[in-house]
Image 1 (tube, rainbow, N blue to C red):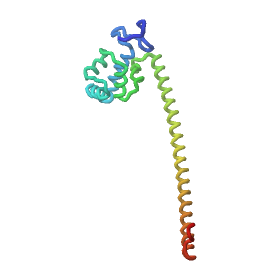
Image 2 (cartoon, rainbow, N blue to C red; image 1 turned 180 degrees about the vertical axis):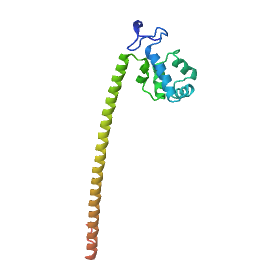
Image 3 (cartoon, one colour; image 1 turned 90 degrees about the vertical axis):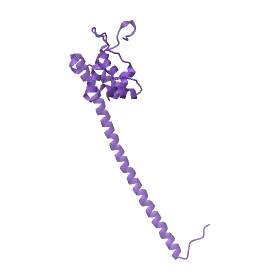
Image 4 (tube, rainbow, N blue to C red; image 1 turned 180 degrees about the horizontal axis):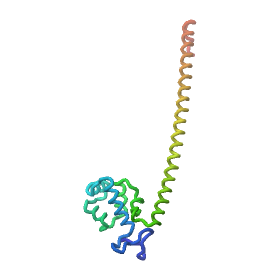
Length: 174
């Protein structure tokens, strides 16, 4: 088991006295199992997907990770999270019913902050879309004006050519 120098765990890395597994690994294992089952993905399928990402893994490895009998590397955690389309940070959070009141408040606050950030991004994207549509309309109007001007100039030129032909021919080039 990996610990920080001096035998201390990092933030949120308390060891479980029963398994000596850091709480973040327990959280990841439970979140992994729940996410996989919620998506209807078998352990074998998940192992194949993870292996396709370049991290060799077998179904038995998934079982050992989910049951807390095998530690995982950050690379494995990142690829497992990506394979299940879940942010790694979410996979490290305690399962809701296992959370203390303090952890639930923190998770709720984090979700609120994430929601506010996404709402701000959505507002900005809507504004950008509006600006882009307005710009497209301006460009179309400008294009239409240029096309009309070209049509009028071409028409005027053709009229001049016709007049010159009727008046006795084209003027010599020179």
